[in-house]
Image (cartoon, rainbow, N blue to C red; front, side):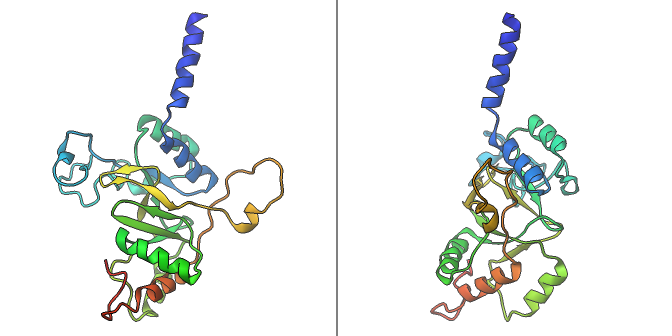
Length: 242
């Protein structure tokens, strides 16, 4: 009897202390149908990451450009929405970053440096532009948008005279690290938290439904708004250049 009670107590403690990554990864994969996989993560304290700013990467590359914030083993093609695989990954690596494989039926994103993105959000709010989720790291913020393919992106860019120099695109074959991950640069968080479609939020009373997939804006609308917000700097340059 004492042994059974001890097992139950250990099980409760494990559940209570379970890292948030597993719950977040399961929500992404099963409720939202976003394919995810564990990222490589930052190097343990006291390792190579002690030099310079931030922490290093657990991958073999000593000069890794995005420490901790990328897939390694497994590779990006392993991204899945299968709950059993997600549980296995994060049970074995409970603090691994959550990497979203962008494109296909999954969200894509436009990202800017953190300073430029903070300015951009102020401008877009002033313009009345509705944004979807925004992922923030200490160095870069990503505005999630509805899926787009390379052909659509090419058409959109061709229609613009120029785009902000700090803008990057995360489409098919790309990836993003999602909250509540920790990478070499620091903590990943939601600057704008995911929210469902308005009609899904407005459903009547009763039992809470399963989490609906977050609403995502069209990439064209966000790109147009960013270009508009970026123009008109006093020196004739871009307000979102850095």
